[in-house]
Image (cartoon, rainbow, N blue to C red; front, side, top):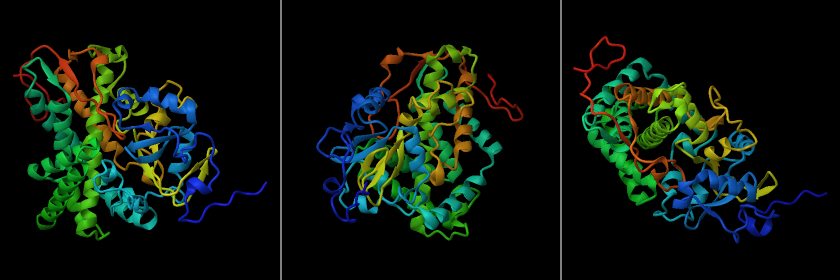
Length: 432
């Protein structure tokens, strides 16, 4: 049997490649809209249906008219994530045909940062980022989370109710990232607003411009006034990053440190408030916060679909031809829940893909774990009788192809007096 000939680099893979029925390469069939409210409401049902119809690789749209392949098979994802030669992160050819106002372009376009490069260029950027992260004092970070969490809790603990996204998880994630990066509030606020627009895909181009501008301002500030923070360390790293490279490294740190961190905190709180294994109303739970975090990272990760690559030529995987220069998106959520590997056991099971793997694996997972666990424990220690204020099925999810994010997490609890922080108190919490 002769080997099929691949088309020339610039030819149309749709016409020139053999196509399996249901292949993502076929443009005339239906694609699953990852930006729809229906998908956001129940992605696991969508993954099951995609798996039934297409197997491990499903044809999707990231935005109207923006096709991609979604990888929902765990073993296919492992192969792709460990093969940057055939699945590179560089999106420059793809974006030539994508308009500037496309809602997903800011999340996928090329930038001089480790997320969109491979090989020696990627290694140079990653070494600088890892060096900055390695300088984080985890004991000091624990204290920072506490110092941020307690005043936030004090803003609503006497009310008997709160929305844990807007009143707690978002401002906490925002403030912790600003503290680690040494970012003043005004620049940080612009960064947060721009990043939210990019994840939502609403006015994403304007959000991207706002975000990028804030990052350049932060780099300029840290070059002029260095201090003990990640951005100052990046400025002084032997990699010798210029201002543009610096701004994009910091942009990626912000992107990972606010929206996904907020969603990890919120999705874990949702699990703990709705699952009796973690306690009826939190009290008496048999499983820990760390157990809940591990389960959420496995079953409902805060970044559902990402780890994007752009094959430079058509490539055959699992019997399906993938076209050149079209996004291949790893569904961390879909792959983690692949029946081929999901045993239903999540305690001490970290085989999930929530942190990705291979050369582009997240370098800050220990930091993220600490922030999320401390944020949740501070809240539940302060308000142990907290309960969900609506029926679980009434919670609404924000549409978007990448994140797994609630619109709100309303809770109720007995009205409680404000908390004080006393130095030397290991728990850090006390009532007047």
